[in-house]
Image (cartoon, rainbow, N blue to C red):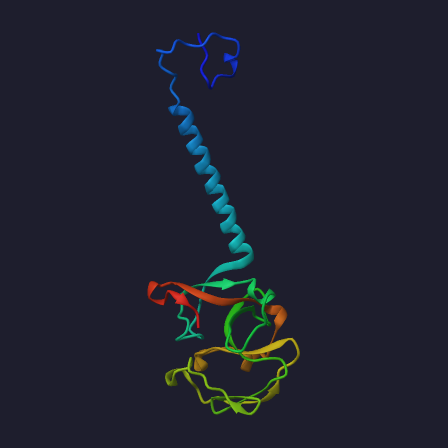
Length: 199
């Protein structure tokens, strides 16, 4: 049987007449196509796993302490790498291990940085004796709670929930050490009407 161009045993055999039809190549193309598809799938999964493990983590918000910015059961992405490149800033919404039980995670907004003097008078937050303008806390979500002046310790942050009357935060458990903070809320993806950057 005369060999074909794809047959490694064709060396030394007489070539087929010019009028002879070449052997079918479709199965080889199909096999190659499947191989490329599987390879691309594996690469895509590996990239996705890398992003989820090292960069972004999907998180479900549980509770109402960050309303109206974040609602109960809302799905968001948390950037776990950003604070390796830039410092935590006032106003950031951060995810951290609850200091009194590190097996739990909390999400709150950074209000005070290390060295800041924080006090709350009848619900109004003061940072270094300046009243903090908090447009992310609508009147319906405020409370009249006060908190004595505190100087935020080194490498720590004073955090509050946006829904002041429903939040367990630094008013209850004190400033959060930076070692407990592991991500920044950056993007909401569910429900669809909340799709977009977290502010």
